[in-house]
Amino acid sequence: MSLAEKCGVFGACVEGDVFPTLYWGMLAQNHRGHQSHGFAAWNGEIDHYTQLGLIPPNQGFGFNVKTLKGSVGISNVRYATSGSLDMCARQRDAMPILVKGEKRSVAISFNGNIVNVRDLQKRVGVDQSYSDTHALALLILQKLEETGSIEEAARACMAGIDGSFAVTGIVDDGTLFAFKDPIGVKPLCYGKSGGVHAFSSESVGLDINGIKWDHEFRPGEFMAVEEGEAIKRQLTQSSRRAFCAFEFAYFMRPDSRVNGRFVYQARADFGRALARVFSEKAKRCNIVVSLPETADDAAYGFHEEAGIPWERATRRHRYVTQRAFITDAEDRNSVIFRKVNILEPLIKGKNLAVVDDSIVRGDTTMGTVKRLRAAGAREIHLFITYPRIIGPCFYGIDMATYSQLIGARMTSEEIAKEVGADSVNYLGIEDYIKCTGFAKNQLCLGCITNDYPTPMADAIAKQMWERVKRGEAEKGRIYESA
Ligand code: SF4
Image (tube, rainbow, N blue to C red; front, top):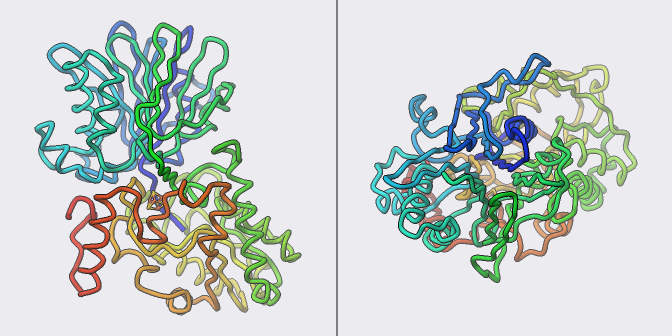
């Protein structure tokens, strides 16, 4: 499977030069966005730098990107789920976004998606080609100029916005800040070691810098670091929490943790649960095969529970780094083809239990099944850890229409036929929730239940689904065309 997360964010305040911390913290999260990367640092004023593409690896000859001076900074990797997709717009919307007003300036790094983006664009006076992040940065600047307080600016974001956001930022006085939306859709954690404070989408951004994880942000939480001192405020109280359930199956690195639980542990439990629920199907299979790397832990759990050997029959090319979900539609299959090689001697004549994280459009699954058949597989049973995706995402994952989702149009049996597999077996929603360690009302399950945790998204989804059922065509991203 292949899909795109909108972004990864990072921010740090250190005693010396912050750039190396920003670089490594962001490189560890490059899986969250491939279209552009960027850095901003404060050294008396805010300087920033953005570039299209992946963060260049450090090959021992220095950082290979423009380095910035200062002890406070933020960084970002991005994949666009808002705004125009042409190259100029991608360059303009690359993050961090730095906005300057008459009196103040602020830079932000953003992960999420704003559903009422049209209202926000009007409110801050920009046209529809501007990304939601750009509009949000302008709202923060407006409120900062009006009130003089970054905390009040964050409060304004929480009050007027339907959607998801995890933000790190720096103000022109050198304050580092971070906040999360009132229902907490996106991951964002805080860590501290000695005089170093850092905010990161995933805990791996802290680990790589040797910074001790402290806590996952609560929904509606705001933190700021001023002159080396951290403060924490709860700006909103919500009875509903809605952490993205899909982060566990696909986006987060297996060595990241949420709420004290590592993602690999949840994935291994998904695999165990699949083997239990579909034990009769599992018995037909000779070997377990995973499509590296997001399904590896689930395949291991499946193999443990079912007692079937797990063969590493697919191998990943180490230096092909694109994530297929994060590429344009026409490139997606060729990325998978280039990225994964199949070891025919391990496949030939066998009945395969193929463990994968999800099926979104079905095109990459179909391509994989074809290759396994060509390698001589006798039966192919797909075991999918993420329940059937039946609705678009409003919160920053690149599946923005009903019509692109094979699971919105077809049952498991129909999907199996369409992709050429002998069976498709999805983990059920209740079993999936149990493995995450979250309660049902703490997760966003919008794309697998069609019930969305924010009012505007829920209303648009229901209207659009009625229109799709009537045969009307969708025009672009659901939240931008509604
Ligand atoms: S709709 Fe799905 S992908 Fe989007 S935030 Fe909710 S659970 Fe995650």
